[in-house]
Length: 166
Image (cartoon, rainbow, N blue to C red; front, side, top):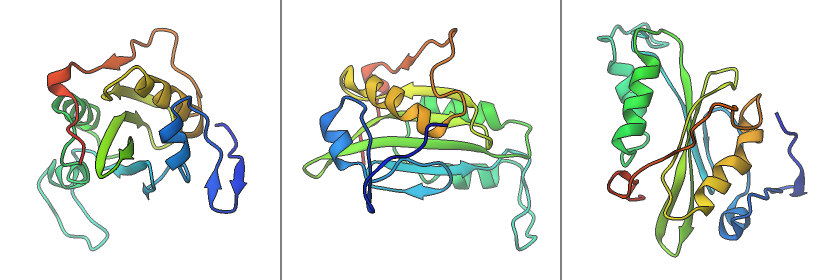
């Protein structure tokens, strides 16, 4: 993973090529995080049925609860998360990247990794080519690979599937 460089104690240096996203970003990180331009959480596997309080749930209930962190997530991204967690007890990590234009949230896309930061899937949902730049620029900070695999087809969602923002 790429080491973080700090502009000041409260702001990480991010250079994706998207000026507004870069200016609004205070940190890009792994783990459960709510930041200026990132919302990321672990999503439990379908077969994870117990919580820390030892309460039992039906298979898929806790995964669906975790997916509630992204109410406007496009269907194809949600389907990918469901497919990647099917039949598993362990979690995956999902990160939504966005910036604000006034009070309007512009969602650039989603990065999905294993808990040890290996890329599983990635979706560009933003309105322009700059959204792909945002995801590619952030990838080194959240994955071990640091770049797209050779055989990757960077998924760009059709306009009807794009996230409406928050």
